[in-house]
Length: 277
Image (cartoon, rainbow, N blue to C red; front, side, top):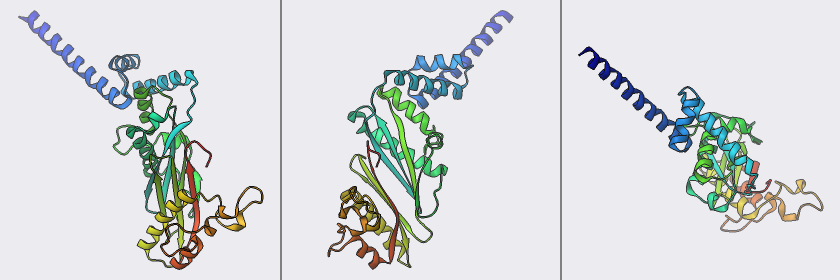
């Protein structure tokens, strides 16, 4: 009886251990998208430490894809906004097929949202600034299940393509101002506009910022004012304030629309996927 009891106890311990291993494998798989055997191997190689296994698989994915040396000329943009601050991120992929995938486009916006929530970098009021890639990558995605870096690694596993963060930037409106964002189509273009206010109605100012972001994507200004134009590099209509405002029902320039609203543009960004803009 003692021997039988010992065997039963041993079997129960083995069963619990197996169940625990299955749970750990499931967690690593959910966070990385790697195959079951790859997850199990990573756990066994890292003393069943989930975090270490996830990092090991992420590193393996980047190294494996990186060895192929394939071009990442495709991709998409993602934007996120909260209050006076907006973040724009661009993800890179090898093919247009992956760039247009809903999961990929959702990840671009999730990366922007993660950086915004984490406060990766808050620019000075009325300015735009680049965000450090390392800060964005370590930011947690909204559901808390992984970081941006882990989500990218999972995308690499699922698509078998080189996927990476190309750039990220933040724009912040001044106190009393507003920021507007616009993401065009499948994320090939995006714009962020920060406005300053001279007592304008808050709701009207926010709508104007959004409308101007649409205008920026449609009209592609290169500089803010005519004083910023460079001879031989810009055309007269490259200045945002001098352009005909496409959202005005009665016509007029962007400068006239701003004057009427009691507002001014402090900064704007027009991002085009695959370019330095």
